[in-house]
Length: 259
Image (cartoon, rainbow, N blue to C red; front, side, top):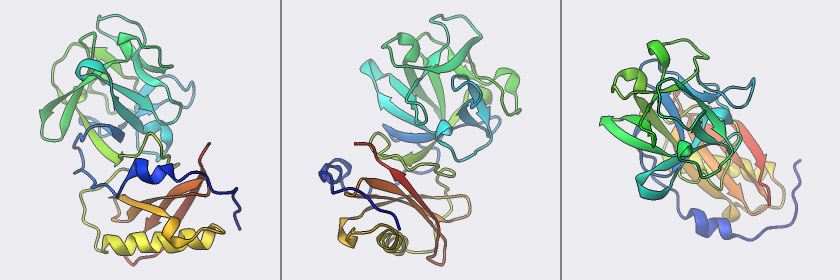
């Protein structure tokens, strides 16, 4: 049985508020945590595990290096921070020429870390550097591991991305190895049943936590129609439940929250 330290301040409840509505898949709804999927290839923006720096496209693996915290910066620009390393999506060099590689790097206030998100079609967006180039998959490649670059804006599908909403609480709530983004498929079970199933499992797994202390947020359904419910307690713990259509918790993830 898991054991945790004494309660910490319940500021999280005021900060997170009530459970948020999940935007439709592919809709940019402002600041939050997203998967970023290329329209041409169907692969996700991914920080390479080999060097923890190169930004490539890769099939969905359900890891933090494929999740991005989009936050506003000045004058209509955004920063895109990797949920894995807390580094920002950046041009490798501060230059406007074509073919500059895309990396993640520590926040330094540089203009090479500022991006506009431009709607091109319903659910499809271009991610444009302040230097003018667009995030681009070279040669319209469908190969996993293809490194992204900055290129002159064409609006072609290799420069179009779907922003798949994961959580509005990304800045303060890390759900660990979240597996897959939300799906447009309706979940057959009532959302209250899904959150109650998760509440019961949290109460069973975590000692000395009363049910009414558990904060729950049903953020999405996955590609199989399972509900993804984020949970957080005042016992320095958080995570998520995956709840199937029959109301059974099929996956229970715990992740410690740093003070």
